[in-house]
Amino acid sequence: MTIFEKIVAREIPAKIVWQDEDVIAFHDVNPGAPVHVLVVPKRVIPRIAESTAADQALLGKLLLTTRIVAEKLDLLTSGYRVVINNGPDAGESVPHLHVHVLGKRKLGWPPG
Picture 1 (cartoon, rainbow, N blue to C red):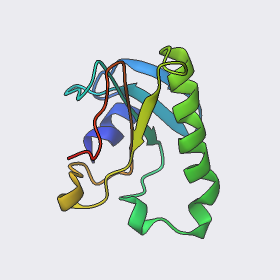
Picture 2: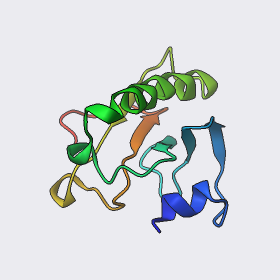
Picture 3: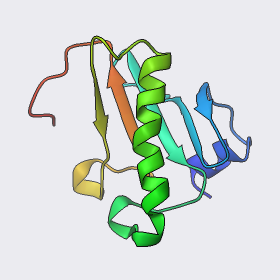
Picture 4: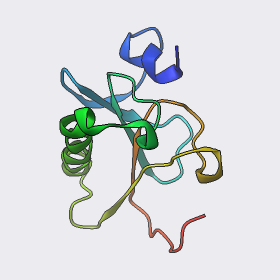
């Protein structure tokens, strides 16, 4: 089980921002910005590159959930970044698809 599966199963505590039957959003324990939330599907998809057409609705829901999170955490006006890492060179550290929502500071470009 990944750490995210353990959070979904409530085996590990997390500071939850929002959830429904498909998705959970919680604060990252190692934040890269003043606001750093992870949006995670409750059903395991190891990474975006392993998603299929059957995952289309859930993938869309992940992105729509970033907007819900941004609204709850007052990021809509100032802005926020949405990031999906895929593979070790991109910084993926947990093999369970997740979307980072970062905000409340100026974010540089290019990242990395």
